[in-house]
Amino acid sequence: MILYDLHTHSTHSDGALIPSESARRAYVAGYAGIAVTDHADSSNILSLLEAYAGFKETFNASSSGFKVITGVELTHVSPADIGRLTELARNNGADIVVVHGETIAEPVEEGTNRAAAEAGVDILAHPGLISFKDAELAAKNGVALEITTRKGHAYTNAHVANMARLTGALMVVDNDAHAPSDYVGPETAVKILRGSGLDGAEIEKIFMNNKNIFEKAFGGF
Image 1 (cartoon, rainbow, N blue to C red):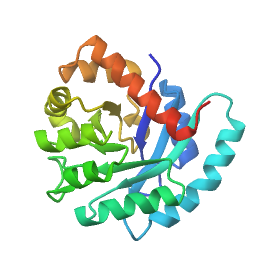
Image 2 (image 1 turned 45 degrees about the vertical axis):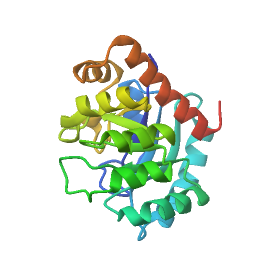
Image 3 (image 1 turned 60 degrees about the vertical axis):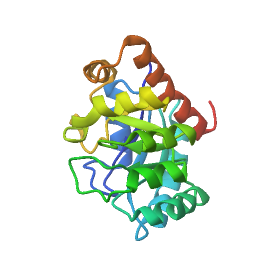
Image 4 (image 1 turned 45 degrees about the horizontal axis):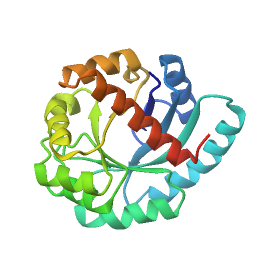
């Protein structure tokens, strides 16, 4: 199965690799494309998107197969600001908007999951012990809930998968890659999804969700 990673980081925030090296590492690990989505708030969102613009154009023009899209992961921002920053990101060239959800591994402000679902972002990353109501709202607004391969954030994968099942919310699988070793590859991603309680048909659907979101953001191939 073909897998696209919709949530990665570079040296523009706390990642270890510049975007081009991150893309190369992902390609070698077996991915078909990645979204570079560095941590953003009101202090850096516009500079991030400006920096990405030239990179994305140059990289995709010279790459015949593997492609990149770019966006932001709104991280530890006030829930009250998520809607406004989502709109700002999209109006300034973001292909994809991810929100850093209420993972149990970090002190994310309560209400972040709800605000992301209300804003209709593309992906609610590692949403921790997301409530049924918030998952239901995500389903209604087309917000995908992330099953993550990243340590710490992955502790609640089974809960997230169950909430998505109950509400019909889309699921995606991402690495939240910060370093070369974070690109686990499609084979290990399947094992992590199985460990989250998902069956073969559900896993195929998740891979397709990643592909569809990537291709829509890219504008088609």
